[in-house]
Amino acid sequence: MVTSCEIRFDNNPKATFQSGQTITGTVILTLTEKKKFRALYLKIEGSAKCMWTVTKGCNFLGTGNKRRSVTYSGKEDYLNQVTYLFGSQSGTTPVQIPAGTTTYSFACILPQQIPSSVEGKYGNIRYSCKAVLDRPWKSDKEFRLSFTVIKAEDLNLVTPSLFLPAKSEIIRRFYCCCFKSKPFQMCVSIPFTGYVPGQKIEVTIHMNNQSNIDIEGTKVSLERGIQYISQAPRKKIRFESLTVCEIFGTGMRACGLGEFKILLPLPPLAPTNMDYCSVLTTSYQLKVLAKASGAHKNPHLNIPITIGTIPLRSSVQAPHYDAVMNNSIASSSSHPSAPRNFNLPPPSYEEAMRIVPEMTENNHDFITHPVWNFGSSQPPSATTSPSKVP
Image (tube, rainbow, N blue to C red; front, side):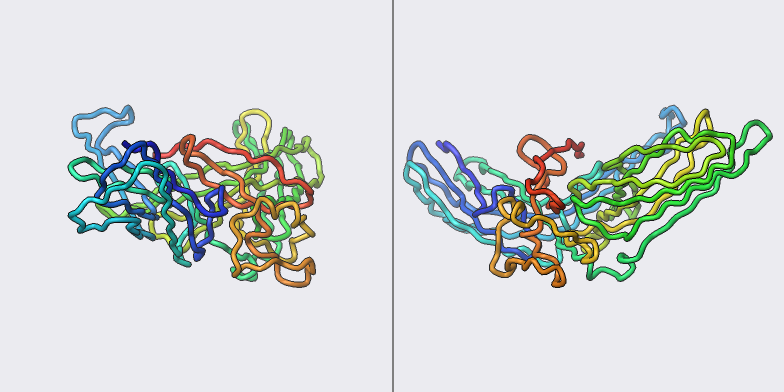
C-alpha cells in the first residue's frame, strides 16, 4: 500500500515562481511493500475560472412562481503539461515498484505571458502540480500541491504617467431639510501612481470646510476591484470590490481649514492584471472618505493606482537588500545580483522581494506574494489573511 507521495520544489519552500521561470522538483514515493502500478505521472496545471448564479423572475423577497436560476461561467487554460515518471499512458504491463522510498525528478518551463495567481469570491487564477498513481483495476490516487505564479511587472516600463503626481478634488454641500450649507472642499494628492507591495502611499489631504458640519475623521483605504467575465451561456460581467488595507486620520471642524498627510502601507498584493486573462482582471484604487457628523452623506473620492513588482526608480530609497536575500524566491542565473548604485536599474525580482502569504484557501493551499522591504534591517513576520473561495 502507498505510505506517502510528496511533491517538493527544488530550493523553493514558499512555492512561488515567476512567469517564464523553470520549475524543478522531485516526487517522493514511499511504499511499505512492493506494489504494481500502470504509471506515475505529474500533471502541472494552470487556469482561470469564474462562476456565479443569478436568480431571475422573483420579487424583492426572493420568492415567486416564475423563478429561474442562470449560472454564468468562464474558463481559460494557461498550462497543462503531463510528464510520465514511469510507465506510459498506453502501457499495458504494470511496473512493479519495490518497498521503500523512490525519488523521481521533474522540470517544467512556465510560459512568459501568464497572469499572476489571484483568489476572489466568484473566481480565481490557480496553478498546481498533481502526482497521479495509475493503478490497474482501481481508481487512480492523486496527490496535489499548489504553487503561486507572479507575473513580473516593472512599473518603469508600463507608462510614463505612473511617474506623475495625481490629484482629485470634491466639493460638497450638506443639506438639512430645505436648506443647504456652505461648501465643503476636499483635495487629495499623491506623488505618483505606481507602487509595489511593502511601499507606503503618501496621501496629502487638504480640507476647506466652510460648512457648519464637523468632519469627524478621515479614512484612507486601498480598494481592489476584480472583474469577472463569463463565457457561457453568454458574456456577462460581474464586479467585486474589496478593501485590502485602510488607515484612519484626523477630521476638520466646522468652518475650518487645514492640510495633513497620511502614510498608507501596502500589504502583500497581486499585481494589477488587465492583460493575459480574458476571464478575470484586477485593478486598484485609492479611496479617501471624509466622515461627516450626523446623518449626512460622507464625501469621498478615488484615485486609480497601479500595483507592480518592480518599483519606480524615483521611488526607491535604499531598501536593505541583504535583509531580504535569505527570504527570496529561488534564484536563477538569468537574474543576477543587483549593484547598490541606485543610478542603475532596480534590483532583480528575486533579490528585491521577500515572500509573504496574502490569503488562504485552507490549511495547505495559500497564495504568497513578494513584498519589497523598505528601510528595515529585518523583514516583518509573515501574515496570512483568510479569504473565502467558491
